[in-house]
Amino acid sequence: MKQREDAGLPDTIRRDPHKPGESPALHELKAPATVGGGYKGKDAPDRIGAATRREERGEERSLGYARSRNTIRDARSADDKRKKARAGAKAGHHVPYTLVDMPTPVDSGARFQPASDRSLLIYFGQQITLEAHQRVIRLLRLMELQPVAGIHNLHPAYCSLLVTFDALKLRHDELQAILRGYLDRLEDARLPEPRQLEIPVCYGGEHGPDLDEVAALHGMSPAQAIELHSSVTYVVYFLGFVPGFAYLGELPEALATPRLVTPRKSVPPGSIGIAGNQTGVYPFATPGGWRLIGRTPFSMFQPDRKNMSLLSIGDRVRFMPASKEQFTALENA
Image 1 (spheres, rainbow, N blue to C red):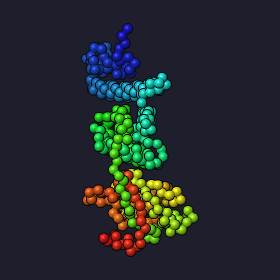
Image 2 (tube, rainbow, N blue to C red; image 1 turned 180 degrees about the vertical axis):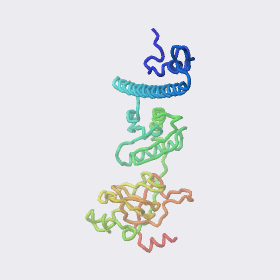
Image 3 (cartoon, rainbow, N blue to C red; image 1 turned 135 degrees about the horizontal axis):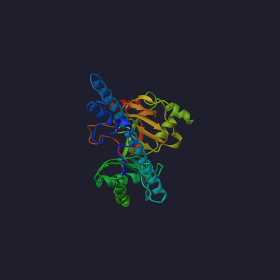
Image 4 (cartoon, rainbow, N blue to C red; image 1 turned 90 degrees about the vertical axis):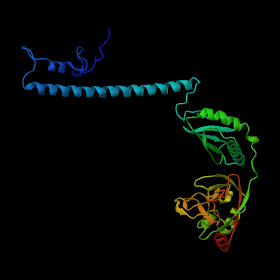
């Protein structure tokens, strides 16, 4: 037997089958007065108004009831999707439901990891090594020479490359399939010979306020710390933090020092800092927590220069100790 559409609803909002859109109560009030009953005279409008208000309240309760039912239905639907995804995963048919659930395939030593709905990370291990660095810059070089439609930007780091893309044009699995082809051709990438650069540094004093403390932490004199820091040829692994800030490694283990507990609100441009086993040069006056051991008069970033950043990924850098007089002369040159 077919159930009435208004079954289960309050009596005040059941519709009159003879007059759709009105409740029986309101229909009765609007009906002509009879000898045996009904409303007439001055009480009729008040009675009709009261009945109308009751009907409106009833309809509001009905709408709230309907919304509650919709909310419950949506929640159950979402829960069903989650159960199906888990069931699929147990059966060996993994269904990605969130980025966390997405698989991280490994190809030729590289590991893919979705970083967001429109970015993908390619890892070459978890350690800072020259081998991983070479693979990062080879992949970067290939993708710069042979761009992929839909890719917005490439962000290299110590042992990974972050690829941001147009999510309306590419999916993570599609991009992974494309990048596997690039990984197979990494050895075909021809890298330019690394540039060799020397950067003058005035160590200690007002230019290197943390030098004495760093030396004391490692049981050496400031002169020994300067000699050690300037004895290494550093590799520019990548640029980040601010334009022109190059992450250089690796710092001699004997100088590896944690960052400051409380960062400075402003670090002078050209300051040489160390943090962990890294060293770098601040291109601008910015907040920073690296320990400052010296300063260079060279401008690390100039927007009106052809190569805006003095250093580029893959460069080799040596720091050359300079006196205060040499620093001043180079700064005013």
